[in-house]
Image (cartoon, rainbow, N blue to C red; front, top):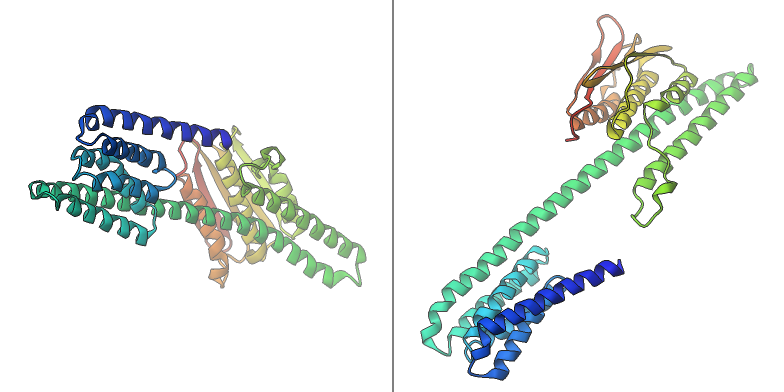
Length: 360
């Protein structure tokens, strides 16, 4: 961090020195008042140095040469670039009061500079127009940048919400089913009750591990990335099927095609799709069996989860959030999704994830 700060300071210093030197050679070295010319040039160079970190102070530093223009007309042109750049930065910062204040001050400065000599009154229009244009451009760019940042934050919140839903919903379904079963058999079949408690413990431990992994993603960049566990993927389907079996649903896994290494995002999304679909089977299907098909095709991975239970539940809202999460994951990679009751009885979730496309 210190190295980067030093590099930025060195870059700003070099730009300020270059600008001050060019301004002196091109405009101010022949001025009628050498002291005023040196002072105005130095203030303009200082504004270049300050713009990145203190744009308001940079604006004030550049404003002084503009106000000295009645003494040395060349200083008005020397101050123009740092003034416009400072207006651009302040307007884009999001501090509306400061932005409006510097714009008004700049326009008043342009008017005030022309007053001592009516011959220069015509400069008010081009200078004032350039100041306004720099301010408006900075304001528009700042607004767009903030909208983009808000969109990124919203997408990240949605991603985290999907991850939390997938992790917690599946494990809580297992825990709830096993707890209910253990309560029923604890007196007559204590061994079965102990097995249910063991399943609850295993599901709880897995949930904690996945939550730690998810929260690890939110760590700052200074944290050690080597301490993060790998994200879940299709390689962990055996554990998922085992946990689903403990919840009372036996899953038959069918793999067709030639399995290939998947991109990390696709692998995680595929795992979560299977996990969420099986969670819905446990919660809503009222059946003891389900089929999970993974079909590796040349350009896509097809996933199909089928059960022969009660079909679409009456409380459609309860399943809605899970299907929304699946739909978002599929859409993220430009895939397709079909989900609905089967003819007669049962429910099917069928998704296709392209293997060559980029995330949207």
